[in-house]
Amino acid sequence: MASRSVTTLVCFGRHVASRTSLRPIHTSSRYSSTQPNYGFKPGKVAVVTKTTRYEFEQQRYRYAGLSEEDLKHLLAMKGSSYSGLLERHNIHTSNVEHIVKSLQNEGIEVKVVKRGEYDAEVVQWADAIISAGGDGTMLLVASKVLSKDKPVVGVNTDPERSEGHLCLPVKYTRKFPEALGKLFRGEFRWQWRQRLRLHLEGTGVNPTPLDLHEQQLSLVQHSQAHRITTVGNRQKTGTPNESSSKPRLLPVRSLNEIFIGESLSSRASYYEISVDDGPWEKQKSSGLSICTGTGSKAWSYNINKLAEQAVNEILKIGKCQTGLAIPLHLEFIEKVTDEYNESLVFSPEDRRLFFSIREPIVNRVFSSSRQRGFASKVCVRSRCWDACMVVDGGSSFEFNDGAIATIGMSEDDRLRTLVLDN
Image (cartoon, rainbow, N blue to C red; front, side, top):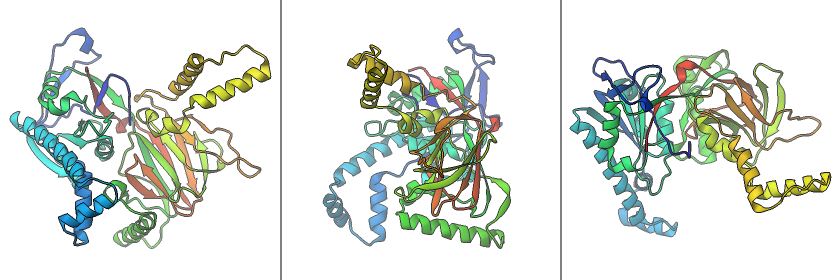
């Protein structure tokens, strides 16, 4: 998730390859900035499409040797509608075809790839990348674009079932040529969205991620897959052990958030944390979230937000303890709740990150001097049994006892984005 405001994120930017057409546009003052606005017309575009639920179920049961009729029966037993899944799949497919045709009509070369086929080679080939799906697909696409000048745009291909905060306004799903026209004419404003970068060092380090969305692994399968990739990584590199004294920069960037915790959610996560090179502090909690300004309206917001019921009960205690005439009517409670919750949200361009220690355990061994706050850098040393570090809900890295993660920001990692008027 991202912004709930009326403006819309479109991850697009200037790319200086010779096959890309850039031209200055003379626009009205509302588009003016410190530099001239440019129209953008890429020569090559990669369209990365999501895996629909229909496709996922088909693939899963096809491997089991089941017929289409068997699939319909099994879905019915689970309370799912085969015809409903097929309908949503057809809507998505139709909208992808519309995007591709619109691009081709403008003389743009198009390559359509499934999210499971999306890799560094696709990123390198394209002048621009379109995410055709929802926010999850958009986050995946953005995570593998390491250049701050590589343009990315999200299109929500099933707006009735997906919110698509990180995508173009819904009206452009079926009117994509209108969005292209704005891009070609330079009718937008630039916005730089900060992202998180991760360095790993210590023991138990494995720089190879698992794709959680594509594989849909159980807890046991997830742990086994991490162990398999760790062994395979050692064999490939010829490294006899798992120790790394030099921090390794991971090949992904986080647009929303990074979550660190035990794979089994009912098990407490044990780790040490240092904020802005401060002292290490032992923590036991249900996990650690570190987000950007873009992600401050997503998981982090829901971790830290207050409910009106809680605010009401706190104000009642405050009124009783102080004897002050604190109003307890619904309008006042809503105002206090909204003001607090809005304070949790900050600009996508902010160069600070925001960390949240989820449900910290506090006793004579474990303390929690700061449960949440802004920082420039956060270091985490794992003391976990079977933990992972998950980037934007999609890429999972093994993060067990001895592994150290350093999470921060760099100007080189920003996504150049733009905002279209609704």
